[in-house]
Length: 191
Length: 165
Image (cartoon, rainbow over all chains, first blue to last red; front, side, top):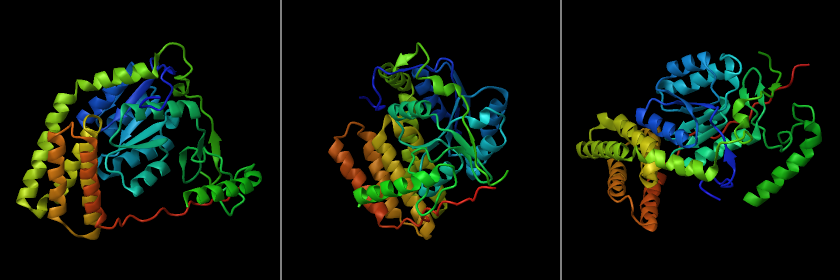
């Protein structure tokens, strides 16, 4: 294994993928761009502002977005709301990896609720970046949407329905008992 | 939009990167990425030094008007140092957390900030310091931060939505 915790012989082909980086720190933007140059991504879009990112998303295909949370006034969150709710199809489904500097619990929760696939806290490494990319490609999480949430399905690990409920999806009732048993076992392990 | 959950399974281009012929191996990708990043090291370290110098100057002045700048500068170090000097990045992260907690408590502690900035100076001047020494420095910083409670609210319960019939 290596820094990416992936088999070293696994092949990855980003030649036809467009990767977008959104960060108001020009040096951080350049560094991330270089990492993906190394990963073989030929089409890389660097955006120093959220307005530029919106423009790019509405005028070209973007396959993966790295979004920094350092923008003033939680601009990244407003951007996520726009992307998931208003951006054209298929851009609204684009996987997003949130990159945070100082990440509070509230920030991580907010990123999840905004419809991000992952939140990566700095210090980041090339291994972690490649691992998350491979994870997104492998898992292919479905998207869900309703009045209060739009983004990748957060219940990607099937623990069944939430404890104490019958769930709200077809098939939840059947898995509720098993899910509760699994959660109880997890709780025992962590205790 | 209604309360009903709609599920979509879009066929995204990024899902194919592990199956598409050609490309490079994970080993090659990591080596190439590390090499590509190295070209930024000189500029990055220079910018980090400037930021630490400014933090030192703020700590010397002890002017409360610069509290916000302490957070901004340490965030900058955190942003850039990660790939080149992870230990420095963690020290900056600790300083951000300290400022975050102090602000929430409506308090300020120059001594706690100073010990962070001195540690950052040590780590930037000794990028190859032994791992156990670095760990001791970072553990010390964590102990300083732990003196102040984290007032972040706990996770709220997940919303429960009844599907529309």
